[in-house]
Image 1 (tube, rainbow, N blue to C red):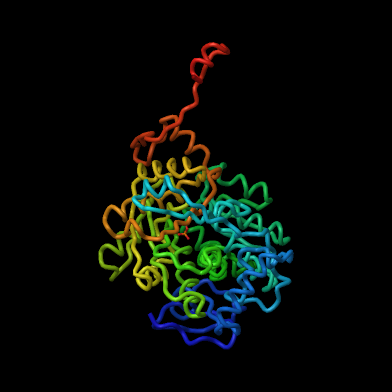
Image 2 (cartoon, rainbow, N blue to C red):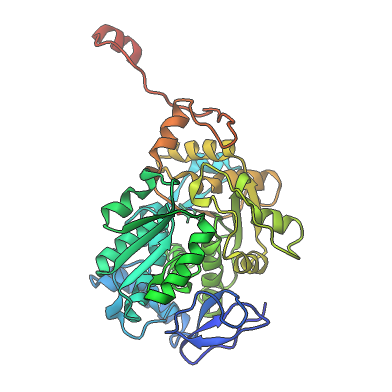
Length: 441
Ligand SMILES: *Cc1c(COP(=O)(O)O)cnc(C)c1O
């Protein structure tokens, strides 16, 4: 794909390469008004050279300034869409660790494996990296209200950043489809939650009309500024590795915003001379919600076929009609990457193995290790490869799933029972010192 010529500073550009219409960075756009394509931010090349940028990013880790302490805004020269940083509200997002996991490496058929754990974010998922940028843009535009359609991590993150920024947050949901576990954070952060008698797509269409009519800024994943924030996950990962490029970066795919962000960030890092080559991107989907896998494996041409009734216990990737698939396709192809799908059983077992490393994650994140195991088995990923897998969400996001897995009660969609392969049940005992001592010996 041809890149648009770089603008003088920052602007919005239609991603559709046969259109490439350009718009001011301050226009409120979620799709191209000319062709309906996805929108992305584009910038002039950074004015500093690569060694200067690397030195600046490293020095900022010693700083007490909030902007420098943020793992997103520390890299602001690479996402320079704001003209005034007083609009930024940071909860010190990013700053997530790289963790070595020998047990998981072994399970995945690798000599070594590193997890970049985005579950260490303030609201427990990588959505925070994107949300600090989306909310900064909302404030810059003078918007007082923000909204999204989501029952999961997007709503938790948006609610937190809106509250911190003094904006009103509205979360729209299909009526009768609420999981309070996933919504608890949003309620705590004070977001107004509206249950509508309609399905997800109908509600998305509705809030787009409402957004324009009553002036609400939308923070769903088609918002281009969320992508700008999520790019920083790759900048931070590279910075933490002293800019040594891994062979593979593996991540779960739902709406495919995150892989789009990673690919864009990596291409921009290459263009800025920060790295000398691109890592290959591997996207892992859950079998019951794998439209991107099916599309790519059918040759990636012609019409994209959404999955009408997506199913998986990994709710963060239960997406039938991923908004960002054209961007994701470009990133997978450009990086000579791969797309894989995994079963519910494979996700559940991989998740327990990640737990045994003392790390833990939510179900969607564990799709990475399950996918690595398949890709090494198929010879796509070499056992000696340098692999970074991105764990997208915190282990405490879905405690119900964990308890059911370990007590042999986890049921996949369609009624299929998940085997408790690495189960770890609690043991009930009488208050008897001899018996308990016997067990402990
Ligand atoms: C949002 C989310 C995903 C999916 O990311 P996309 O950008 O929609 O592909 C995966 N895991 C977790 C924990 C998430 O919150």
